[in-house]
Image (cartoon, rainbow, N blue to C red; front, side, top):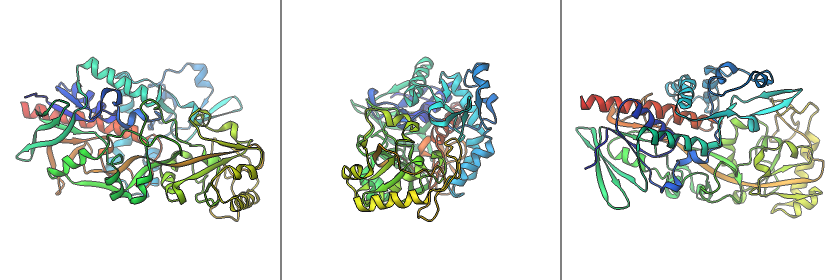
Length: 494
């Protein structure tokens, strides 16, 4: 029978941070990946790599990104304190997030990102998506200036390389099926490998294998039947196995069961994450500069309510509510040059026409209502200076829904329509834990030897999500859970 101090279930960012952290503490560590080696990396593999961190000022950023003085002199980067980070999460969650978890996340964000750098993860400035050049200065905005080099692909490559350097074992096509306990304490875990069902003795288990988003039945039960139509943006292997195993030994579930991170993604994106085309290439996140309409030709959200970072994770579900689960982002020639890089990819679905009338003829849309909507919108646009690097207050007046920022007329041909649907990223529902990731039972007592990280922790996100928080949460609680699991194993062994 195989024996390890700590077994990690999952192989994404949170899981590998937990594995590395436990190994650093001196434990023997096994990582279980349900998928084959060519599909390893969980949802993290598909991310854009943006990672939210409380950095105070640019000096803190230089501790994780090497910048020469000339580059520094050209950067305008507002500080982003732990209070800013904390308040952003609590604001978008409508104060439903568990305060002690959020405080732990924001306080540990900078130390964790510095630790990740020591593990070989390489970071860079998030120029493409979070900055705007004006008068010779690069202005960063939205509290998200850091990303991993080569997106989630680079992040996972670095973490797997570090695991290999440390001698951490990784088993592929190995699905954890049951956590074995004695006297309410973890003593082993059952694993279905390609060859057989086997039991691995261990002192600690860290569950970091995602939530229920890739299981159509569980997703529909939690979120509603319309979610059968949602695209799964990430791995197909996040099917709630970890939650099921934990609940079977008395764990308490926690968080918003009917909530999730869901975005507007290309209507022709793959139905599940394509490991041959990773890097979050199908998203369509310049919508704050668009007019977004459904097939009835009507607007349905305030596209410019806030920076993309604070609305994109909730607008996907608004698209899902629309007839045929689809919407169109409409742009004209004057704004087209500033759209994000994903709009220029060959994978992007776009319809272009010289006039709005011809554009409508090429769409599955109520043409008369569409043209009326654009006409009403154009008439409602107020004077002001368009400035994509800040909430410019350039708004509409007299229409519902209003557009609060970045309102420009749709008036200069050619015109462009990008069809989008809803893509689910992860569920906000998971397990109840302490601030170090210890899973608790129905009476809030820790289950000895059982820990969780990443999507598995419930109570962090509700309703909405500040961009880049997921990778940071995974790393913070992965690192903490791995260290705590190792300490527990050492205590048992001694």
